[in-house]
Each structure stands twice: as structure tokens, then as C-alpha cells.
Image 1 (cartoon, rainbow, N blue to C red):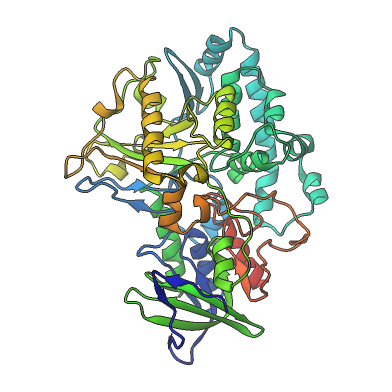
Image 2 (cartoon, rainbow, N blue to C red):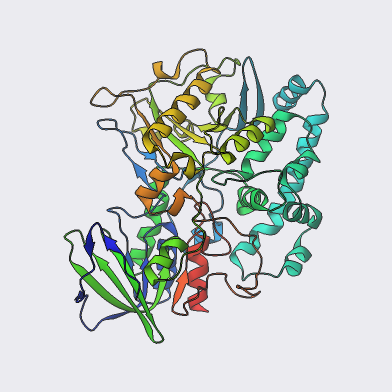
Amino acid sequence: MGTLTTGDRPTPLEPVRDDAGMRYDVAVVGGGHNGLVAAAYLARAGRSVLVLERRAVLGGAAVSEAVFPGVDVRLSAYSYLVSLLPDRLVADLDLDVALADRAVSSATLLGDRALLVERDPGPATAASFRDLTGSDAEWAGWQRFYRRLTTLAEDLSPTLVEPLPSAAELEGRLRDGQLYRDLVERPLADVVADHLDSDVARGVALTDGLIGTFADVHAADGLAGRCFVYHLVGNGTGLWRVPVGGMGAVSGAMADAARRAGAELRTRATVTAVETRSDGVTVHWTDDEGTAHAVDAAHVVAGCAPAVLDQLTGTAPGPRPVGAQLKVNMVLTRLPRPRSGLAPAVAFGGTCHVDEAASQIDAAYADAAAGRLPGTIPFEVYCHSLTDPSITGGTGLHTLTLFGLHTPADLFAADPVGTRTEAVRRVVAQLDAQLEEPLADCLATDAEGRPCLQAASPLDVEASLAMPGGHIFHGDLSWPVATEQHPAGTWGAATAHPRVVSASSGGTVRGGAVSGLGGYAAARHLLG
């Protein structure tokens, strides 16, 4: 049996047996959104289900928090937008979830100019491309590329809630199989370059292959391509929407669905070991007071990262995941005015790109791969309160979320606080260069007079959420097709232990972001 320690306290040899004589059908390790989805499906099917969550709140990375003392704003502190959550899953579980479309697709700030992509592109978008490049050719290339991606999304999205297809079966369902093959076989930068010439436009497109993923867009390893596909196929539209009420409203609805179905949800329950046998599993866990418990189940659903499951089962761990994002949460008294002349509500109403031209992405990757914090960190900024004013509770304040690329965990290892502080200094200076007024002048202050700015490196994410390496997908994403380990017709959730099923983003073949696909696959695997 594999064991972990809680602090410096080893798991007692004779733990308290939970509900002596009771055996659950399923014990779910981790109450993140995937664990909750699995619990809801299984309980609705009549299985007895126990969910054990280490933190005091359910939801994992999909939570809303009042981050700043005395400031009545609930931020989506970690995960922040929704695209991959299937409509079918929402309907199956009767989830009370509202997702709002953003008014703008994206705006790229370029000093006294900007590249604008409207939610429903029209003359302003065409004029923006023309102003950037001097002709209409780039806008035509953009339209062609995203029409092809829309077709791919429409064909690929339905397969995510079906048993795994073989590569041949999947390609047989795609109207544009060549685009999919290109994304699988060729460097993402080359696929984008087939359609776009502008350094800026290429960079905007490439960012979807780098969210939470440290990858060389010029490599043919498929890493950026996989990330790109998952960011473009959600519900057949690829739209990234704002969860009304914050991300916690999404995981809260999933928890409610599990409770309604009869699942038992326990927080402050730290799982310390998973002991597998041919006829079942014993899950060992400790409570807040250090008391050790044990519970028996026919199966375990692992909502935790694969590396954590390895520890719990005493399995030799695989390569450590590498998270690569800088997250900065802010609350502002007003939105700053961009130098470009765009209204703040337009500039920040969708995805606001800063220093994300293709050449800047390449330079940042080269720095990070050489072990240096990028001199210029590519990043994106979002203002959720423009789309969902409810999260600021009528205060008139605004939220601003910054997501930086190419900042892998290893860069922070030697000096976690100092490196994070320097990274924040750099991105704030870069944003200030695009504004008519300093960001600092717009920040709200908390009850103690401190600016409302909170930053998290991958190491901070790891410490808070038990995500090894701070990897937001628990590990590199996979192509959504059958593999040698997960044959066609299966759900891609099996593990090396017959009684243990994965539900996590990186532990299932199809997952990533707040999709519930991992939990759905785990439940379907067990329900047959």
C-alpha cells in the first residue's frame, strides 16, 4: 500500500473505519469539477458514492473567491472561462448554469493602434486588419482559417461524449480531414502560416495552442496542436464564455446535482493512500483534527492528477508535469484607457492580447527554454465584470484577470517569491505601455489599504490545488482518439489498477479546461 503524510504526521496503522460495515460502490478522490460530475452521474444511476475533498470548498480550480479582505468581489481565482463543457452534460445533470457571451472576441493592443476582432465580425474588424497590414488579404486569410476551424469544431465536438473513435473512424467523420491531419502532424506555426502573414495576427491565433502549455510552436511534437484543438472545438463553436456568478457557480451546480442524486460530499478530507485489491479498494484519509479514517469501496474514481494518484497507490511516478502560466487577479475602481483609442469596454470586453505577436512568443519561449524569465512575457487580459456585473455585487468595481504565457514552473524554483514579483513587475510595465494612465492608479485597495492585485505562479497553483508542477490540465493534453492503452470503443479512463478509474483532465484521453469530460468518461466507464 502506498502512503503519504499529512504535514509531518504519518497515517496511523489502525485508522477509524468509516461507518463500520458500510461499503460504497464508488469513492471519489478529489471534489474538483470532474470528480463532482462523475459523482452526479454515478449517483443518478443508483450507485452509492462518497466524495473526499482535501480543501474546505468543493470545485478544485473551478471556484469563486473573495480574494481581497473587505472587497465584496468574488473572483474566478483559477479557472476563469468555459467552452468545452458540453451542452449534453448540462442537460443530463440538469445543471443550473448560465454562460454569457462576451461582447468582443479579441482586441490586440499595439500602442496607438489595435487589432480588433468583433464577436460577430463586420466592417470594423475588416478595417482593423486593413489598417494593420495595408490590404484586405490578411482579413480574408483569417476568415478562411476560422471557417475551416468552425467546420472542424462542428464535426469533432460530438465525438467527445462518445466512446473513443480510432484515428481512421474520426477522420471519416471530418469534412476537413486535412486540417486535422495538419494539426496532428505539422508544427502549429506552419499551419497558422498557411493562412496568415502578419506577425501580429499569427501570434493571436497561436496563443490558443499555448494556454497552460509550455510548447515550441515550431516543433512537430503535436503539443501545441493538441492544446489548440481543445481551445477551438467546445460545443461545436469554440466560444469561450463567462460563467454568470463566477466559476464557483459552475462547480456549485455540479455539487448540487451530485447531492440531489444522493452522493455524500465531504470536505477537509485529505486522502493519504489508496489500497487496491482484486475485490475492491480501501481509501485512507485524514480529517482536520488529524484523525485517520478508512473507507471501503468497489471502485475509486480519481479526480486528482495522475501524478497524485501514483503517490496514493505507491506507483512509480512518471515525468513531472510542467505548468507554464502566470495568473494575476485584480480589482479596479475603473478600467484604464488604452492608448489605441479603443473604449475600455471594447479593449477588455473579450480577450485583450498584449505582446503576443508570433515573434514575441518565439522570443519568450527561447528565454524560458534557456532557464530565463522572458524579458517580454506574452499575456492576455480579461474583464469578466463587463459581461457579468453580478460578480462585483453592485459595488461598481471591475475585475481584471491577466494570464501570462511561457512562464514554466522551473523558472520559479530557486526564488519563488522574488521571481513571481519580478514577473508581475514586467507584465504590469508592459500593460502600462499600452495605457494612457498607469494601472496602479486604477487598482482598488483592500480593507488594509493594499492594492487589489494577487499573483500566482505554477508553484503557487501546485501548493493551493495539489496540481503537480502547477499544470492546469494535470499534464499534457491528448489527441481525442483511441490509443494502444485506451482502445477504440472505450472511454479513455482506465488506469493500471482495474478498480481505479481516472476522471482528471490529464488522466483521461479527453479532458482539459472546465469541461466535465473526464468525470463523464469515468462514469460511463463504470456504468458500461
